[in-house]
Length: 85
Image 1 (spheres, one colour):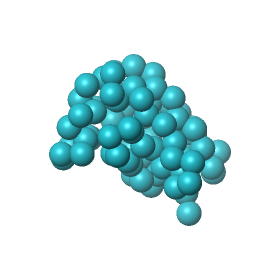
Image 2 (cartoon, rainbow, N blue to C red):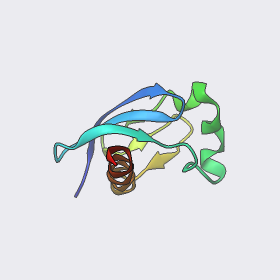
Image 3 (spheres, helix red, strand yellow):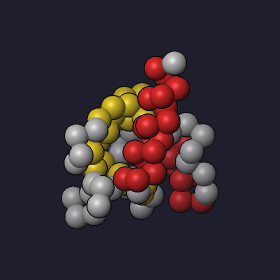
Image 4 (cartoon, rainbow, N blue to C red):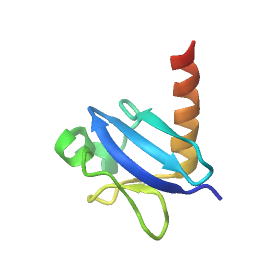
């Protein structure tokens, strides 16, 4: 099972994330935060409060929004491929 070890806000909707399998890098979440629970995250002051849930090791925000590590890793993988072309 994949877990997130650390996350850091960069700017805009970009974060730096490190996974327990050694993968790490930048992920841009702009356009991916849809639905009622993600609505408050359009405010970058709230988005910037991203952290790792210490028990579940997922990305979370104070309003209860969270993202599964698998989703974030796939997004990182696809964005890394796009950026390296």
